[in-house]
Length: 238
Image 1 (cartoon, rainbow, N blue to C red):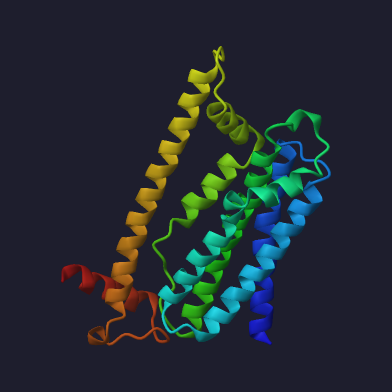
Image 2: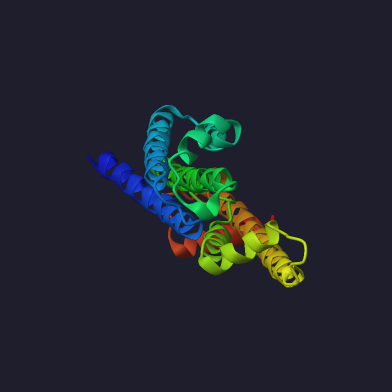
């Protein structure tokens, strides 16, 4: 029963993240009648991807197996890029006169970005539970703080406006140098932030694993803050 509630919580969290991203993108691109189909596709993909993680977690013997499943699901999330006929079928339901000629690009973005976010969130949650149920260290090198910050910065009206203005460079757009500079600086700042977080997480992971080596005499279940600090200090000396 605990596993059922755990995976139900994972489903709700991943659905919330995916739907928030979908709604934000749909509002920015002025989606109309086709948006119901887009939301349905995102929900179906999110449920199916979690089901795949559920099956994989019950049979996985190493955390890397969950990474392989996540990479396969990423390829499925990118499928709309290789299926223009699917995007055309969805775009045929669009009634927005201001998106003629670019509605396929908008629909592709509305499908791909939320699906990728759903896979990322589910991988993190499933991996964390898989390690904890086995009494293992659940710290990862993935920059979760930088990822959440990037999502909040980009998936908002201001961030989307700057990104769209930078990508859709038109001749005679005198504001493009300013928007391109702001967008480039923001992306560079996020990359530096992610690199710093990865470095810190890598050091913590190395210290954590050093504290849990058999030679240190420490176990996951009997670990206390004092013993953790002592083990980390000893690992740093070596």
